[in-house]
Length: 168
Image (cartoon, rainbow, N blue to C red; front, side, top):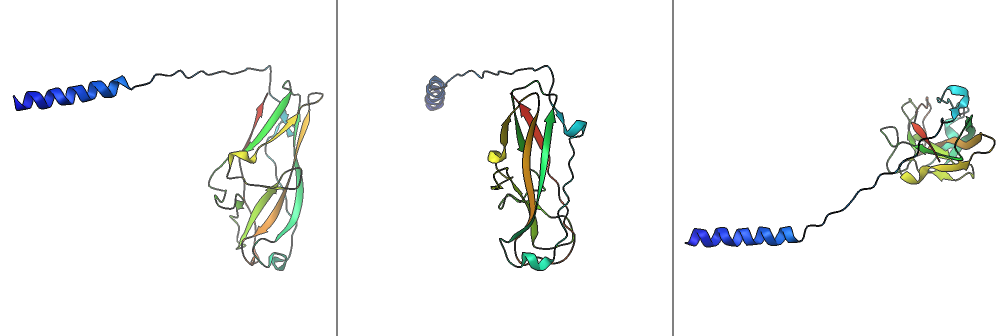
């Protein structure tokens, strides 16, 4: 009898828990457009060559140098706006939001700036820039620069980041 009472109590507890379950619906919407934009004439890869500078230029943490402009050029677009997003990955320092140097120079990262000259934290989802497409074209303007994490030492600087473009 004791086992029956225990089983009945457990059964009632499970029934009560099930009574509090909630159902929901996930709605998925999308949009297919005629074609996406052509990026940089057909090749989405971009190489930014920062200038050769003295390591002494980056003598302490927070110093920047060598700001170099680059543009992601969109053409033949059927969309009305485009948004770029830099994808998080192993090349991004999660604390600073800068690109990690894989070269031989120490204490230096690469920092991205938006078209307003403001630092972009590549580690967050808020790193995107949206532009309107006019006459089937648009330019997404950025800058890359050296960023010292401490007194930089001489050597090479090399890094990369993947990006994607979404269209509206």
